[in-house]
Length: 199
Length: 170
Image (cartoon, rainbow over all chains, first blue to last red):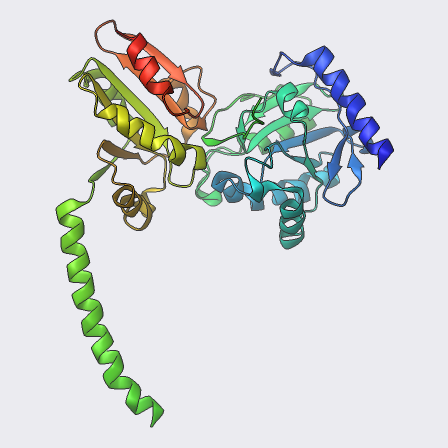
């Protein structure tokens, strides 16, 4: 436990000293992180040895938009993790501001929905700040070298997956797979504000 | 025996239910907030033409958004100022207008105008409403109709904060 804390502290220091003012844009290089998963173990992007990219999703239990996209996030992982593009979900919310997003509640939700991907808690909110996530759900698609290739929404219809006419994340991954530029590499969507710690 | 005894009860219940719903409908019709469902072009037009007060404030919210709901009374309060008009734009699903949005407004006694923006493809709309907006709610746009200056906030407000912003407009 002490080692875990130490690692977290180190990551925290690194993040805050180097990168605390910027948020990521497409083309920037993202940082790896070490955060606690719902199974109690820590997860880093570098743990995925064979990854060709990473679907980093800032999401949570409580936001209705995040809930609306939950099954689609699961489907993304089921489809793309075997192809080398795993989902890594991060809950960015301050659990004091949002008790429904506590680590215990995260564990419950992950079990209920049988998340096939890690669901990490960003207790210090440093990864969230560094990435520049502003809402849930908010996707950052990284390539193998951690370069950001897409930022935004999963698709263009939160109410109804089958009515979505543009599947931004899938299209972006397909472009990465075939070595092409991602055509739509930034989208906006309505979402819940991230609940920041009171400073 | 059991089944037989149920029939008259259900009958009474039905009548009672009918009476209750008539009463409910009448009370809603007389006092509840009217919420108009609009599309983006309607909102755009509204933002271009609504200049009946010195300051128009658009607050983007939804019944499920906790920080939005928390700050609504502060907006209600400044809506009573003589030179300010507050317009609430809801992002609730249009299908929830009767069972969620209207009952909520009634319960909280919201007097300001409320519209429900019935759109799904927000990537096409958010930039048009405000280019610096990432899409998180609550979000607020203040338009000073005298100077045509515009302020944008992607955050929740604390009590008293809005009064100060409005004061600084004069």
